[in-house]
Image (cartoon, rainbow, N blue to C red; front, top):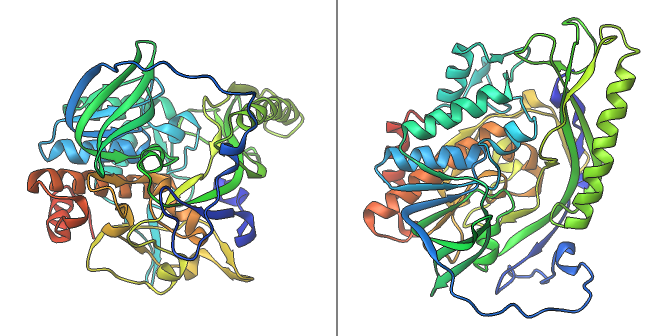
Length: 433
């Protein structure tokens, strides 16, 4: 069974509300996400202190998932001095650390059938994994091996001359006017700061634009998990096989309407989902082709699908995709993966064409030196699934990195960057737009 077969969504499956930084969107009530309302037992006063600046660069990319990886590669290939910040000890985010191994949304439905629409960094990575024998394609979407993917991403980052700081979590920003001046990080080395001229928010949760005071949509969604099982026969009827012989991929949607920013809720889910993965794997042993199955790996990261989504200069929607809307500032094309139901109308994959992503969807309204990519760029709730898939994350990441690099060269605000120049950069990097 493929990952998309597990997924059934409707507009009611996503609980969302529009919230803001300094000013809410017009006509929207300003409310705080539940994670900000967690009960506290008084307060403590943090002593004032000087924060050492440990590094500086042209462009700081916060978060090294698929979007951050592509953003860093794109910016570095344009000559920018790039630092890639990652809270884990590996690259790939939920793709590798959450075992979300299907590379969905690489293809789209056209009049002549299915065709690949995602190129650039995503395609380069996919081709190299296939050449390594670490990618198989049982359906439209390739399934990769997570360790090979971590390895190859690390090599590509080194080839691009990118500095990576692992085991460091962004915890706040400093600003000079509307511009971000630095990102504060926490690590075993203590609290420190990294200065940059431009920043790319690929944190997944929109941490940088949240701290910068940008408006955003706050979403509660289902939080689940994917895990790997060993000793499966190739012809079993459970899960999807991976490039490693005998290793299968399992999935659960988990609990619905969950707050992915509430540490107590995430701790509870972590415990219950890991118990679920253990129990389900033991149950597998009674199934045909799974008699010798064992739990090979539970993911280091749970499957948080979406939390904060930027209220960008132009939020894309499912209507845009269904109408095949085009933009003068298009910076990427994404494919489709699963069936969706909107307002009671089911839109099957075969009815949905490829869809364009405008540069404006990656740009905040106020912060002049910040671009946004990955599952937190600007889109409406009805296109959540396609917008947050791995291939789409790399599409938006590469575009956000190229836009930041272009703004750096022009010494301009990202909102003032000439889309034609960004498009030319992306075409030179193999992107088809």
